[in-house]
Length: 76
Image 1 (cartoon, rainbow, N blue to C red):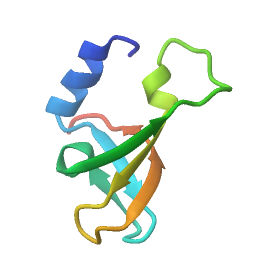
Image 2: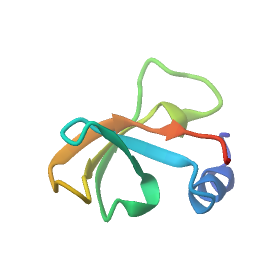
Image 3: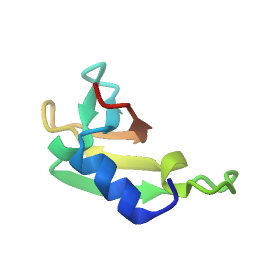
Image 4: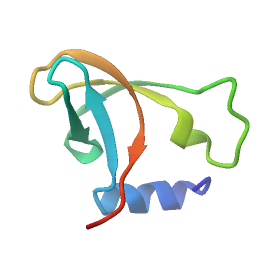
């Protein structure tokens, strides 16, 4: 899924998740109000670079700053 359009479609479908270590649960990407940074994985050279990025975000529930790899889940 190297196409940014595919990433956006996955977001629209609610398939992109981040993990909050403080809450100990996954958070839907669409619920995150504050995305702080995106850190690319320098060791990854595949066709899906966003998939291997780490997102720094503020958890919408506990409001702590977290970092998490992006997780793609299937619909259903």
